[in-house]
Amino acid sequence: MASTNDLKNGMVLNIDGQLWQVVEFQHVKPGKGPAFVRTKLKNVESGKNVDKTFNAGTKVEVETVDKRTWQYLYNDGQNYVFMDGGTFEQLEVAPEQVGDAANFMLENLDVIIAMNNGRVLYVELPASVELVISYTEPGVMGDSATGRTKPATLETGAEIQVPLFIENGEKIKVDTRDGGSYLSRVKS
Image 1 (cartoon, rainbow, N blue to C red):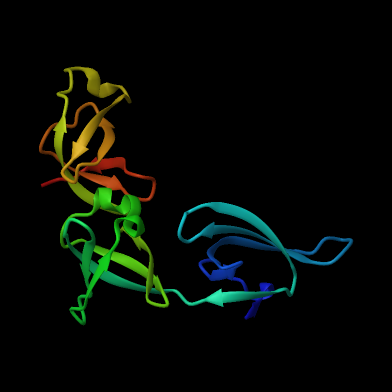
Image 2: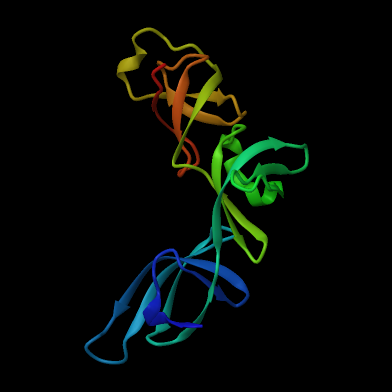
């Protein structure tokens, strides 16, 4: 147990049997009345964000979340298989726990897996990954000056929007934090 006065960003709390990560917090001491703590919490499993206010000094249950780097090996058809680079221990993770991260995972990619009491909570990708465009419509000459985009299919099968000048077979950098937006071309 900890007090709401001890909250820090990234801390994981157990509230009513659900795990919530502190995204942001603020201690407020109004001129009149008792102090309180205003927080923004993110559900670790569903990703849902909520605002919650606690009285200052209220006891909250803190959970330990173990975050370790694992290497993605392959998908065996039912689960995703990861390996710890230090111990060579393998871990099978269900598709529901991998979530949208599967759209940007290639074999041998290092990811962070968060676990609580041996249970996988989520898979966290690097901020950006480099992927090859497997298919996109050809761009029209002269269209590169505008900010328009077109759909493109990545080598993982995910579809994102890219600028009109991107062609098949090009390697691009994709931002994984916002669901896969185009960042830049990768120079060979």
